[in-house]
Length: 238
Image 1 (cartoon, helix red, strand yellow):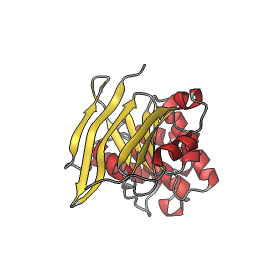
Image 2 (tube, one colour):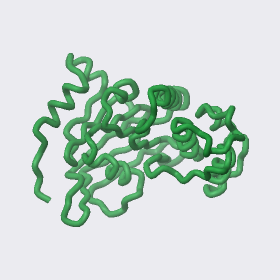
Image 3 (cartoon, rainbow, N blue to C red):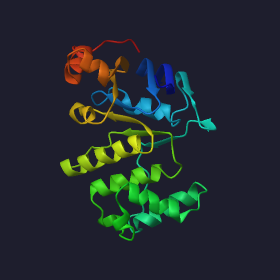
């Protein structure tokens, strides 16, 4: 069994008197695609922001495994990175690369090929479709060769073709490059095509973590499990 690349234990988060996360634990194994599902307002984005270090003040513990010669490197597309619309795809990646202290045009070209934008290397971003823009944002997150990629609602607003293209890209990153991926979404049907395990977050509580294999063995569906663990909602005292 693969070891956990990221483990979060007993995570709590309040904004003023409002509690957003209640004693949440999450376990992400190296090499898997983890689908974090829940309705809008369930606390998914807050949890992702905590996991990648964007929210410093929270209760609980997060442990990152060693990968290779160092700690797991995380990249995220949560608050979408700013794009310079009058610049080309190459120029945008070049600018981000310089900010990160990286200076390799070859890697930028390789990333544009991976995300399917090699034919648009000199096209201004303002002419990109939403799907192309999303792939460019993903490309920016790949500049530092992360071990764990965190994506918040990546298919929102995409048409069916854009969704399929993004799904294929994520499969490639996972299978060919060995990247572990954490995706949040409220669209169960799409995550069923992509994820290998799931965490059901409901009203700030991790109601269930389960693998695709275990779902199949239990002769049920992800939708049925989701309904089972979220039926009727839950009450909490802030």
